Image 1: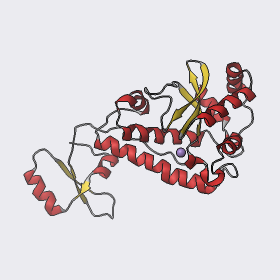
Image 2 (image 1 turned 90 degrees about the vertical axis):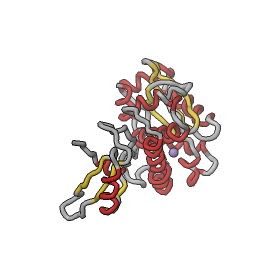
Image 3 (image 1 turned 180 degrees about the vertical axis):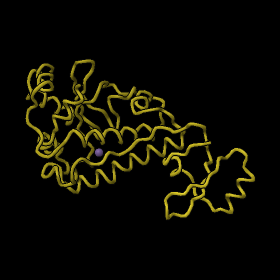
Image 4 (image 1 turned 45 degrees about the horizontal axis):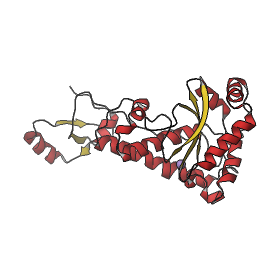
Length: 255
Ligand code: MN
């Protein structure tokens, strides 16, 4: 007996009963089933055209935005947030999952996925990074955030960069110095905090990345993240963004 998960059912192509019967007679390898989707729903006939026993490849998901589109105003405007989340981010999620299906990628989790980034197609690599990076970015921001962190993360930043102001200066430099599209990062590299940037949708968990470590804080410096409000003035976007940093979430990731 084959167990069909919801995801698997979603991926199947509905076909007519007539074709189902015909195909069932013809096909010797295709697994077929009739699955009632709800009490009032008509049964949907599905054929799993590429069935592998016990296969349920890891797929990426878009986290629910932890606040309203307006929440980060005035630093990030509502229209930018809405387009960023519903268009840009959603497209990365769709595209990476399309690539996983089309290329039969079977890593078990995000960590494995990125550890093998060098083996991925450009589509799988760019869109997996785009998915993960934005999920992370939304979480390390909040309304009325910012200020200097206290506790363990405050100590770690002061220890690694001598002062919070110095840290801010270096991080801002990384964000401003990234030519074209990319991200600025604060990472934990084996107990040592480091600042750097990556191009495009690369991240410090990818085996292809020069900057390697556990992400603690990230800033999206793609023009789509700020252009509607700030146009070419990335410096103003970065300066304003400091008011949004969710230090509690950053501290959680320090462990
Ligand atoms: Mn973005």
